[in-house]
Image 1: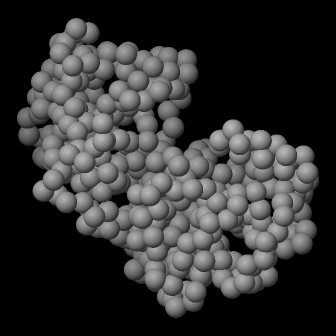
Image 2 (image 1 turned 90 degrees about the vertical axis):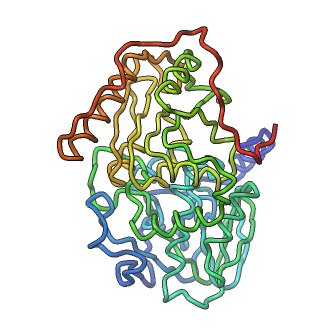
Length: 397
């Protein structure tokens, strides 16, 4: 949030009182199940984490906070429009739902935003964009629906969103600190939440919960946007965080040299377009990366392995669950820093053990064939030559 937006929010918070979360519950007028349309969700094709049928909820004559995709009517709240109980408590603690000014909008409306920022690469591709999948339900076909956005999307992300929407849906921007009174509100399901209680102790969203049907649509759609001939296709990639402001490897140069000696190519995903990143990860067989938004690109991998490096013992399951659902081999390296976003030193022997474990698992899957270690010596040094960065041809300096 910009400094100006913070000032505006402070003024509005002083002027408008928060909504009481002990309000009565508002029930939807109609509920549509994605499970009624096998092309949208087929339980027989989805594994345990993906189970739990997503549902669209329709509300008549309600007022909506489009920045949170939460609906109410008078004092009654549509608790079904909250992401989950943790989301409800979080919004309550922030007093984020206030009696902001109301703008009247005729017709059908929908929203895809939540407490998670759409500017974040992970939350856009895992939490926000997948919600648009439900708009392809046949019961909504041909109905003019307006999708209201309150946070600006960068041009490439907005282009992706437009391209995945059905033709009867248009995008309109409205102010973040407002409410919309609409004739009919289409509340879209959060596909990235745990709908079946698979990991009840975790309150995190994950690409691992996205239905198989959506994942296949999403991969095809994104890969069709890239010129494969213009994008390199290394089988092993190491994701650099050289341009990041936190969670960097203090010995990245040595790590890159160590991995390049084993056939890896160092990449900086931020130098690629969205479609180029999709192609890059779709052809990778092994990925080594620190915990970060770049690992969202695991969604494009159909097979292979990933090593995720955590700076501390705080280990969010975003990509662990995603890798398991996608059938990827997975190894985690947990370092001993006290803060999850701290810069950290990655011992090369720990990295070698993780790679060897992946290779051993792959050998077992091939029927017990011999699988050698990638090497247990540290190799390389802090003074090694700088890593070779594989840059996109379209990257800007």
